Image 1 (spheres, rainbow, N blue to C red):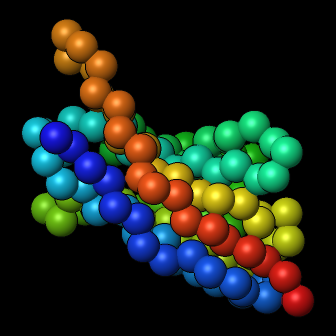
Image 2 (cartoon, rainbow, N blue to C red; image 1 turned 135 degrees about the vertical axis):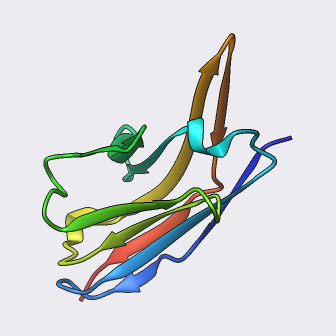
Length: 118
């Protein structure tokens, strides 16, 4: 059974940095998964923040130039480096692993709170 475990997050002042980690276990062919980071702020819908699909990275316009996603297939992990954080980045952040191979394999991390406040 696949599982994603998230680490990191917390409280940071505006302009600060945080790094989120997401480690997979039990995912066969981890390198074939599209890995994404999502976030959900109170009262808002979940939105995609960053995605790595077959080596191609995409970012939401709101985080371009400030957030950097990285991936290690050897470690079966993805990371989200968040710099120049703003109060509007406050949300619960989730990592996601998605693979379609005959059937859909879709896994979510447990979520981690990021709060940007003075």
